[in-house]
Length: 86
Image 1 (cartoon, helix red, strand yellow):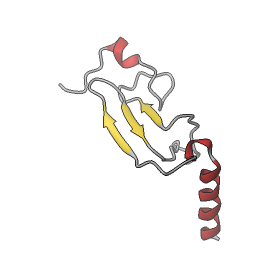
Image 2 (image 1 turned 45 degrees about the vertical axis):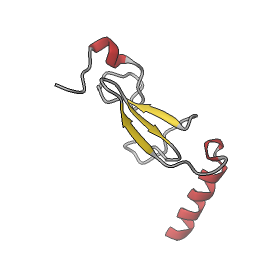
Image 3 (image 1 turned 90 degrees about the horizontal axis):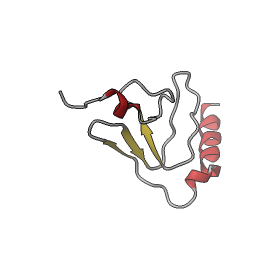
């Protein structure tokens, strides 16, 4: 049943080490000329719908398109001179 799947997913997230302690609200910050910083308790899904691994409550997501670790930022924006403002 759909409800069972949601409950199982919720239990799995509750057991995740990043989810210890009180739930942290999610925030997204666009760094000037850099990545998107996503903070808090969230699940990051890939294009296939599978959960992507993370080990921290804050994740830097690439928005320049040059990272070899997509969707994560690897600092390539600095090398290519990415600008978030024209």
